[in-house]
Length: 203
Image 1 (tube, rainbow, N blue to C red):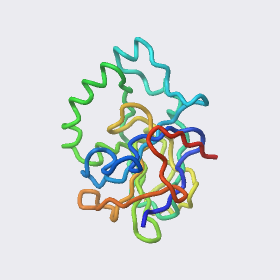
Image 2: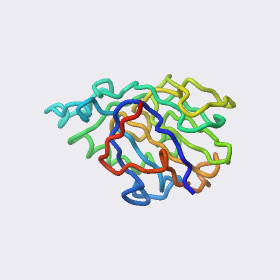
Image 3: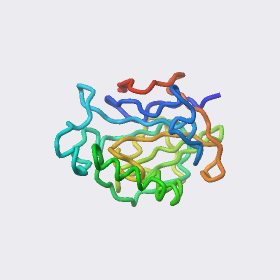
Image 4: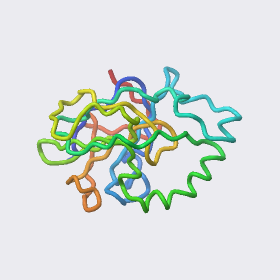
């Protein structure tokens, strides 16, 4: 049975890498990511930052993107069992810079899940699954290990830390806190999964 979550945000977000479209959703089963999902914050017109000639040629500061720093919420009730908040928010890459970024992917994978996740919070549910919310803005985490949270409680802010080409949030569920030996757990949001490209609007 999937772990049923609430969306960890408000406003408009576009779905990417959804397990509703393929499993493993991110093209690999490494680090228990088979059922992980990404959401990219967009503006009222459903767009991310405007794409310009500069976007094609060079990295862009994450502050240019509409969702950088947008508040994130706990997706489930439980106890916080993991927090990391010290990684920097790096520049976003689109166009030609994304090619160079892709060439360094092997190095990031070799550094392990924590390097890919960047700043993150992990919440253990009452039934034992662990839900991770990743790529958070540096210094924005509002919870601590051992704290009990309810679904919808403030958690952090969206950022561009870890393995992230533009500000977004990555959500995955695993069967234990030790990611290297964990198994992926399916997730749903209110009983369903949005598909790639679908815009989710949460209040």
